[in-house]
Length: 407
Image 1: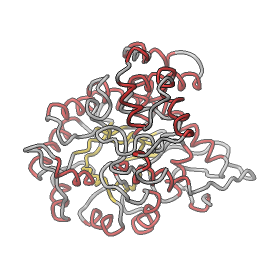
Image 2: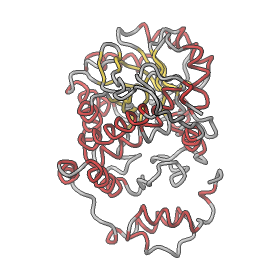
Image 3: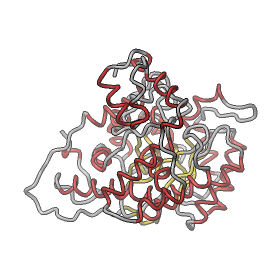
Image 4: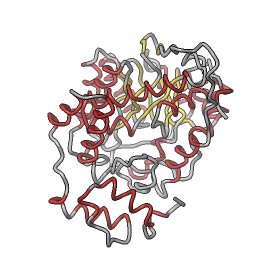
């Protein structure tokens, strides 16, 4: 889909794809001219849609049957509970939801979101089967915390304004942090520009409930406000804290008294020194700013364009990661996110230089479709796919993934 195509007439191919996603109720809407009209009409005909399952029903979905069936049912429940904010497309590629912000889509034309997907798709895995790698080493240690595999849940939030509000922030963050624990990894808690402090405290309580096995991210607010939240993060026992500095672009839309802003190296250094916790700078897309974060004392960076949700027409994360890793690999932890849908995507990022990978939209679906068990199911599916990809590329350890496995 070309830039801006979401504002033009929908093609027959795209309509068929959309109809399959929306279900029988939406198939009846064949006379509509645009995707926007399709969504509006669907909103006006709730009697045609299947009622969203209750939380109890959604969680029960993943209690029986084989994993493939469980996953199918979780996605079905997620589609019903997330619509119309997210259609839970068979391939989450940013095309159907381009420009839908607030929501789950990419900003503007949606090109940055799409670029994440396409940059990964351009990288191919070299299959190798004559070797002795049968059971790859998946273990990964992060600041003393042993993880079963190097895929973490990214910081996601805003259930009311981004996700439709059919579950609350407390239920959502419990699903993310608790589901990650069930899968053998950890999740991140988000901050929201317009969220009251009480919402952030709710997210931190979810980390505390899991004995601090989570990471808290803070918006790039004023220095005073960030340090205030750092103290709350420390009290929760969280593993690490950071700021998603890429949210600075939303400054013009911040609510009164809710300042977000870019940071200088000196300001980053002040924040790093304000806490004993490992400090993460999320939203790095250039080598020079990665170096600045390192010089400020950051323990980790996240190579990320914020899921394509802040600046239109940025490169995909996979395009910029290799140069950043070449400069800083081994000097701090390098996370990367953007477009991870399968375990093979995670392996590609590891081969390009990431130490670990963050996944966002898929775990949102898991949380809405099955609570903690839904999130764990999504992550375990990715882990299994990662194992398969490692065996079939001759990769023995997630800590020693070589770029030569990419074509």
